[in-house]
Image 1 (cartoon, rainbow, N blue to C red):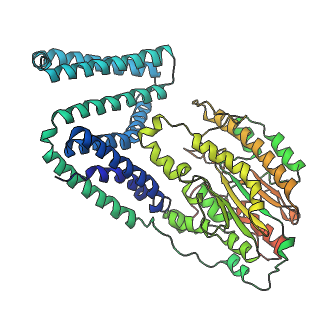
Image 2 (image 1 turned 135 degrees about the vertical axis):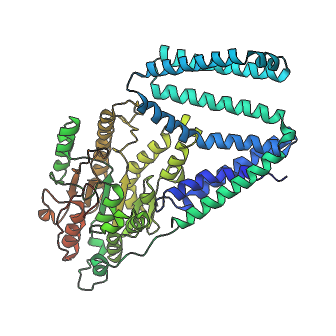
Image 3 (image 1 turned 30 degrees about the horizontal axis):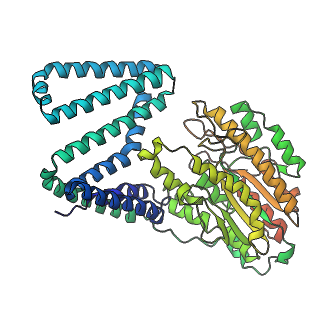
Length: 533
């Protein structure tokens, strides 16, 4: 009987993420994780076959491991949600009740089936299972006593330890039973081949039906038309300033930080003003989601409400990647440098002349995938920390990577969660106080922006255009959806056209009008906290 289902299982969960996130995750995002998963499956399968001398047993052990590995995160998230929603009492009381109920049930079952257990435990296999059961219960008790009661670790950490220990126990017991009954696995193998094959076909159909493999064409707008308009001034590229457009995800305005976080950010704002920045103190984001905001600001226009209502992420991806601002600036001699984030829609840009992305290992797709697996038990966010640090240190170096004037776009995730840095750049201790963690990370971002701006200003041959914006404000959950953002401008010309309430949709209308003599009309500064009407 051919054993193929472990290889199907190795890719089903990965493809499921692609199918479940149309327009955000692409099939290409899944290629490297699938190759790694298939490679591991093949090696483990062959090694176990050599050890057990049985194809079916080797396949079932690998299949069991893959199922446990790829479902760990889903089960953990579900159980954590149940625990949080169950009762509003201290975690120690919850765990005490759970343990008491489990022990009571265990005693009841032992008393009820004591005769059968006595008979079973006299066999060699029964003794092995008894040892496993005792070891498991002892492990649970030790984790509970020393982890929670004595060491005082958080409830979430204790849940992770208990669940990982349980999964290991299931794997050990499952392996033991598979080896014991390895000569009776023909029918289960046939069943698993058929079921996993059917699931794989279903997932593949969903992937390609979702349209995650491509996107629509972008309409020709006034900015793209202006790129080919001979009446528009085309200065000598040697005289044009470099343009840096830096997005700090979820960075709120000075007043917002003061009123919602009790944090005084005036020192950083004064520092920016001392460096010649104009601070739009009353600015708001046009939308309260990253993709909507960037699709708008990079195309100098509001997004068609129908696209937003349909959740058409494929179109938003295309609008961000093949944006009108980039097209216009390239037509005037600019070279495009792209610094991607781990977010799917700003992870890469095929039109960039120079790019530094987060890489597949730091991508949002990979992070999402790993969060559904047992890797989440071991993995802090070191890879993401490295990507953020690389972005801040490499942005000033982009000037040396291209000839001609530079247009640089960078999407930097902090101060948005995950909260990775304290104010000094060290790993941030995770707590339940998200507001405090946000402020700590924001203080780190401030220091990095100061260093970044000083380097850009010092190394630029001509005064550059620097725009630093939040794509939306923090606290984008529940009933609280605010739109006040940081929005600051360093403009060598045209600063007199700025005003306190300017929003990102008009940022580059001002810049292009000033540098190239275009006649883009300023749009009404709307800010939508939901779907536009």
